[in-house]
Length: 154
Figure 1 (cartoon, rainbow, N blue to C red):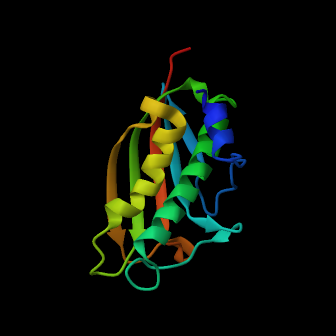
Figure 2: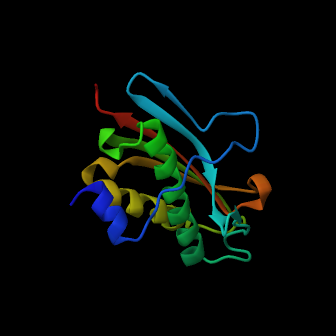
């Protein structure tokens, strides 16, 4: 099944690249690698605010991470000139989870992003990963995720 068909099957429409909220660019390409800046979780177009282990549970955090994956794919699609088939593989995902000191399920939250990337991109979506707990994120967001992708040589 093609990437576009997988997106349609999940009723996903990739968003355009969001304007940066500070002094950075959404992505940088060097050689065949694309580095995508951290994207925060959004709900209804606004920051998805919460702290895992305090006022948000793991399943909700996982949904937030999946929402970020959709935004990351939108940015990656732009970086690929509109064609996600140019993605050779997702190399690395780094997830920051706004969490209380005793929260230990950062990896399960981050699965929301990882599982969607594999579902949409197939084997090219499988990646190395890090998931960290942090005391706070920009705008109070519950999760922020960045990724590195490798593109096929032209």
